[in-house]
Image (cartoon, rainbow, N blue to C red; front, side, top):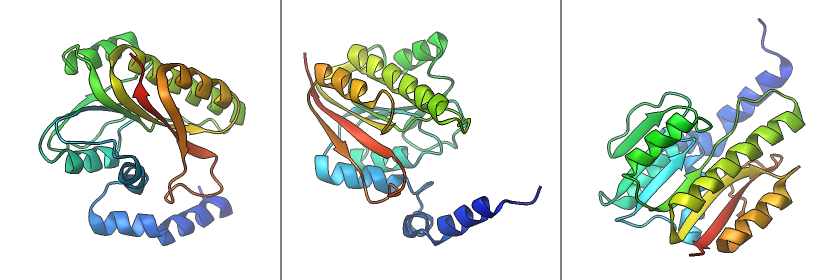
Length: 206
């Protein structure tokens, strides 16, 4: 199949992207690493000694950043429906976060103990139908928030990628019920035309 003009343009833009070039040069698996780096530089989320859960981890660039910032002290449990090449210091579970059995595996991996930080960069398989994709993304986000309710320590933080659209305001309301403060972050590596933003729930309420 011949690539469409749109996909060619996308590939061209991708190859010229400064964050793609930096990721290749600096050994990160994806440009998304710079989104977490910028947010963590500002909000100081990752500290040595923490237990961190990374939801939607593949290909692993957020895990790479987290490993660096934990400085050999702490634990990372990562989960994704897609396979991920191993990263030293990361315990990876391959499975669908929407399935009860996979959730049980994740709970066993954190030894049924509360965690310090949950980071989530999840997206469902994109269908191209905007409302369907938005609903799928929101569902994953709500599951991640539910996981935080049960397993995030009081005072812990939650960083999640969302798309501004249907259900966004409701999600912010739900997060405000769980966290002292909820802020929006749009890092430089997040493309301007994308409706993607990151919601950060700070200081989980007891």
